[in-house]
Length: 234
Image 1 (cartoon, rainbow, N blue to C red):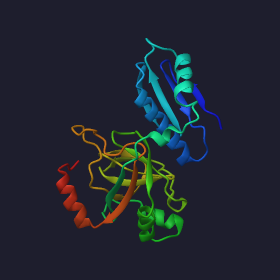
Image 2: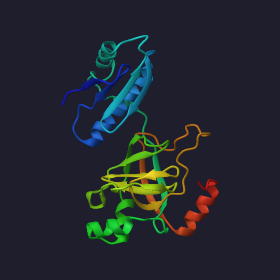
Image 3: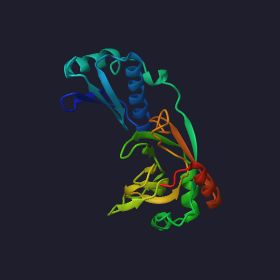
Image 4: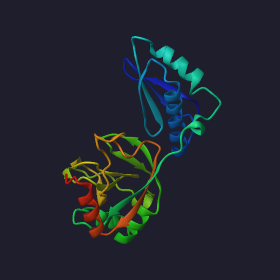
């Protein structure tokens, strides 16, 4: 594969990974972002990593898309070195999840769909390490992947109007935690008492792109204690 750079609006470009495999592609685009952050060109206004791509927003008063393309090929995506090797190591998070609360709506349905027990749903969800591939939808909402095929589920046909803060859910081969109460169409299997987004914290989001996450099952009593310590009953 070769590097693909496409125009995105009047002040942006998207660079697509030049390798196969989701994990390798994501490491590559994270490395490109790190190279950009280290170089800190004056024309760069923002950069956002997703699964296989890197979006750049530039200052149209300084440069145009042709200049940005040339700069990227000369200093970043066109080099023979692997920028991911120079990136800081990702943080590893172990997050507690209670899988036995009344609002864990969809665990039984997932178990029935795959012909397994509810305990197997929990065990499979906890036994894997997930990468933060992207942030979006809501502040602090991290798209984690990939769940094993034996847990994958399509989104709900009709999203719920209210999903509680901390809800742990699955959609397709992704899993995530809802940072705050919001609408949502993912399949809920548990709740996490950890605060994922706090505007007064630096950085405000607990999880960052490239970090890894493991889930640890806790009891309902542990959840209630940790939730009360959180001090935010949203």
